[in-house]
Image (cartoon, rainbow, N blue to C red; front, side):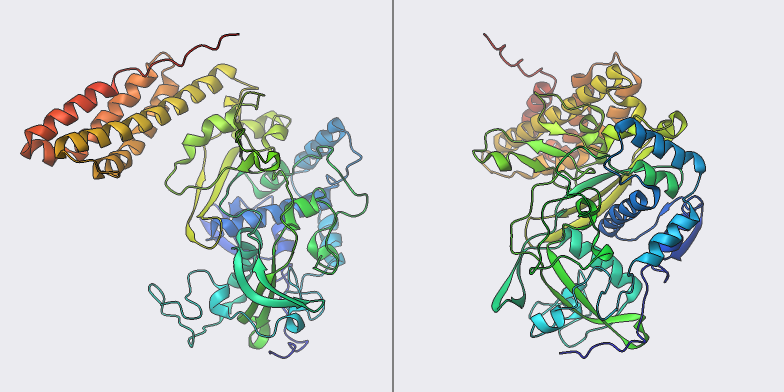
Length: 512
């Protein structure tokens, strides 16, 4: 068991540089304090790991609410919007409020009593550490083979503390479930953990022209849900909730954005605190995760599920799915018949000043994972300014977007089925996963995106015919060599392309 770090080992998340930022072509590293002091000159975060950036945005938005007073649940909706407009008009965060906030709370990553976003009790509650390789994503740990990494069980290279803090955020928000390092609390030893609150999700964050605009646009409004007066706190604002004193309820905005982690972590510093040499990684809560509405996630309603509490699920990240395919969810306001719910943060964006609203883009951060332990791929994207396309501002445009998204998806399903049928006919087999289907879809989606944007510029163009043309071109490309060699393949593909242009039958009308 590692000894307590000496008092001289310090690294302040507030004042030591660890956050990558960008202004024009220039990149820099800052701590949390300077992130706010210079937010009006910073264009955007530049963290290399999108899930870490998504987590940091939630933390920074919670701090924004604190230093601006937007965390006051007593404000009416009009007062809250007026205060946010005032903060935007000021052009920067109040330096006195920023210094007062950061001077009041604990930010030392290696503090012996209150390390930032960590639980010091793990030194006693865990009989061994988890190892630095288990902490760093992508490294093999234990008996796992080192397929893509030079690291192994006996090669435990330290990690720079700045990088370790980003990994810390990824574990807190996107961490895996299942087996973990055993932890003993009140005489009971457990080694099972829940998955992180954002695991396998894709987030949509407002993106302004400066970080100052981004953070103020990203503050979620109080919705009137249960609030415990004086009880809302971020983990660094008081002793972090642990198994001995679990928090009661999800409060706004601190606990909603920063206090839902299911993982307990403790970093072990190297000499001088510039690196992390080991880590404890284990469970933080025994209770099931609480049902919450994250303001940056989209949700899907599945009515056929018997368990009412599980009928609403967050929309899963998919690295193979282009962001524009979610545009219909983003621009359409939810109605009682819809199955998708756009991010709640979109409900506050219409009250922004007109010049900001016109220029506001959306930053997409996704982490394609399974529900338990497998991490596939993370990704990020930036949309063009799209708030003027929302149903509240341009219902005709919003409906056209929805029509095009539906057309693209329906054609993709049709292409998959027809490519499978063509393969089976040409080869006289019944393969469940014929190669033409996946290859045709891979070729189809880039073409469909081009068609999508053209259809938005041509509101009278025929949507099904345009996507059918893209699907036909994709199918011809992937079957070219087969059609040249075999007449049966040429005939089967010709029939499939003919059927692509046939309109699917309209659904039967409901009768009273």
